[in-house]
Structures are given as structure tokens and as C-alpha cells.
Image (cartoon, rainbow, N blue to C red; front, side, top):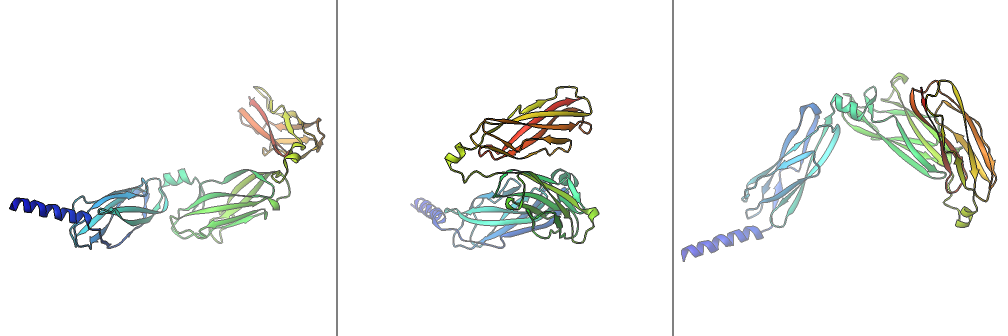
Length: 359
């Protein structure tokens, strides 16, 4: 009989543990590693809580927010008044800059959830910075010095972003200059502490750009306030601005012009000698109204456009003629794009390809 009573009491105690909601009090829910170098390798830390309830409890699971963080926890029951410690490790490999990660901790039968944070700043190694941010101006490193926005319809806007990193020991307050009001630039945050990441935003307003077709914008960036021009870096942002036909009716589009190029590929063949080569291709209008050619353009400085029609009637064609200087091209295969911008509502941008193999 005594044995049966003991079993009943044990079961009742276990049931009480399982049914009692967990109540925990964290000594702290935030662990800050501060700034440390990537070469130091994974960094360990821990945070603890007290079982402030009236019954034993247990940790069901812990879940870090990303694969860069590993966490472990005690599997034993935690008596009232006892402390449990969550141990974690952050791996900084190839992760320069500030980090802010979370670990979710689930306690008791109801999976009572707590969220703890780990933060810090990784000072990137030389190899990581050269890989992720290969361009530098003083203490400021850039992930890229150019960005292409692609086609942007007239009347709309487009934005692009380039990340930067402060590899120095002092806070930086970068400055910049532009030569046009068609593109606006900002930096978030405005100043960068050592090891901090920032993002340059480039915002294009096509209403402030006069011409359709390819557009290139140069932004001079100075790594810190008062830096000389010798320390600057130039960022190039380009876009192709095309007419916007979204406001046209189906009938207007049907009655509009239809452009196509023949041939789309101008092939000079193999063993092209150094010097000048002329090229030409046709612009055909298969539509019902006049095709207006806004611009014929190549971003390659070796290309000169010598002739193109400004208008092509429905059912008619015109000719584009140009010349390529092959002297500055490297040996081997080449492909140069020539863009044709028109009022074709369906295909406002057509591209001819000049290809060949230089000897």
C-alpha cells in the first residue's frame, strides 16, 4: 500500500510540474560583444535566467535566428530559485560590420518564449574586405563603383544602392558631389563608426532628365568631411530612359508604330584587323503611324554614330550608319551594343549588336 501511495505521489508531483506554467526572470536579455577582429574567430557568450516560479521547470528548445550563431542549453530540470544558463557562439567569418542577432528560448509545457539578443561589431580581415569591398578611398571601402538601373520609363523613378564599410579607427562623415539634379544621393547612416556599414542610395527622377535613351550619372564621393580630391572615388550610375506608353489606350497602341532592326547582329567575322570598320543596319516601321527615333547611342567610346533617320513612316525603313575604332579593343571576341530609342509603345528600346573577333 505504501508503495502504491508513493507512486501516486510521484505521478502527482510530475503532473504538477508539467501543468504549472513556467515563470522565469532573466538576469539580462542582451549580450554585447563590443568590437572585435574577425581573425579572433568565434566568440562565446552566455545569458542566464532564474526559475522564479513555484515548481520545477525545463527548457524545451533554443532557436538562433541565423546559422552564424550556435546555442546550447541545460537538459536537466530547473528547481525553483535555481539558475539556468544559455551558452552561445557567434562566428564572424566573412561577416564584417555590426550584427544584431536573436535567440528564442522555449521554457515549460506551454513553450513560454523569451527572446535574447546578441550584438557586436566585427572588424573585417584584410582578405574579407578585399573580397566584399574591393574598392577603397582612404578608410572608406566600397562594394562596387557602378550600378545599372536598366530601363526606366519616362515620368517614373528608380533607385539603386551601394554598401560601404569604414575600415579605419575613426568615425567617418562622407560627403559627395553630383553634376545633375536628375539624381539624388543620400547615405544611411550619415556617419560611420569604425567597423560600421553604410548604404549609399541613388534616386533617379526621370522628369529632370531631358533626353530619352542611355544616361550616365557620376557621383564624386569623399570618404570624410574636408578630404581632398585625391582621396575621392567616382561612382557611376546609369539608366536607359524610355517613353512611357502605360497611359495609352489599346486602340492607340494598335495604331502606333512598330520598330525592328535588320540585322540585329552585325558580324565582322574573325581576324578583324586593327583600324576603323564601318557598319550599318536598318530600322523598319511595321506600324501604322510615324516612328520617331529619339536617339541612337552606344556607351562604348569606340563607336561613332554617323547617320540615322529622325522619322520613319509606316511601312518604310531607314538606315543607321556608324564606325568603330578597333585600335583600343583588346584582342579576342568583342560585342558592342548600339541602342535605338523610339516612340514604339511596345518596344521603345531596340538593340543592335556589333560582334567579331579581333586578331
